[in-house]
Length: 133
Image (cartoon, rainbow, N blue to C red; front, side, top):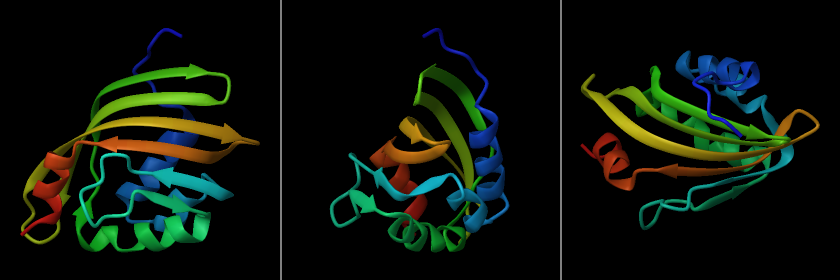
């Protein structure tokens, strides 16, 4: 499982949709019964979203808070239906157009070409700088 800096096409396309504010395009990667987890979520924030509808409801508010940008420092490892992605996102806060970086580690599981589970390890201190005013 040697790392690469190339994201798989399905994930790059979904991230392009997210950058365009197209939440439906992002949601196309998920299976109906998918689970999206945030193990490092701050107190009061959801730690687990179960089902595509719950994930979509959570994602729907993000374009009013953040404009997703490019990823750098990408490291991808894949084995079968599992993918591990490390990256740094460079995003803009909508409220003041300030650029913020956010470190990610994603553990992604897929079945039948759809995401069934993402464990989304975002840096909670960096996240707080994005969502706070």
